[in-house]
Length: 210
Image 1 (cartoon, one colour):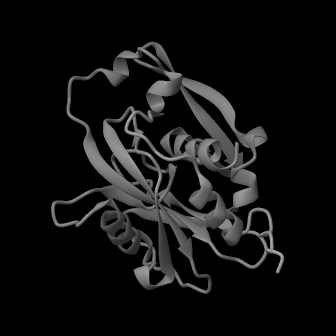
Image 2 (image 1 turned 30 degrees about the vertical axis):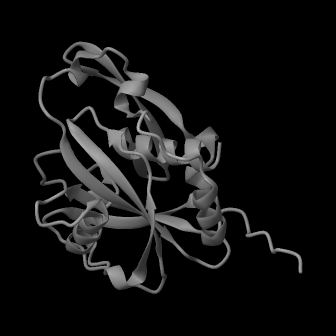
């Protein structure tokens, strides 16, 4: 019997690509330093803090989407930025997957009963001092979100096809203490996906779609 090829950019295609991705090695090196080599922001002499985010791929019929959030404007750090649900790994979290699921529920009310964890991507080191574990999950549609207004102003979905198209991966920069800091920028409508979130998306593209 012939094997059915999953539709491009469907959750089944995403699952197959994740299963076939190159084996991760300890030497895999992803993070803001890849496009800011030698930048003094990266050498602050502080230990990296461990964090985890969920990359929620929503299993719509046909083509999948990725669920993103807009951080609350009233937050002290990274206010108003587009992000994956996630945060610092607590001592009570069994592993990064548990942290990502906990933070997702706390931020947007999406329960783990609707999320199938596929696994993890290599860690992403952010210039802000975090080592981030990106956790991949397939989300069953039909959910209702309950946004935590203290942390999130909005949640929205972006087609996986758009995010995995390198034509939408722009390079941009801003000044940091009179030095230029480079990052990826992926504008989608009136949403600006940039910085660490865009860097993680770029890593996903390089490992699964490039």
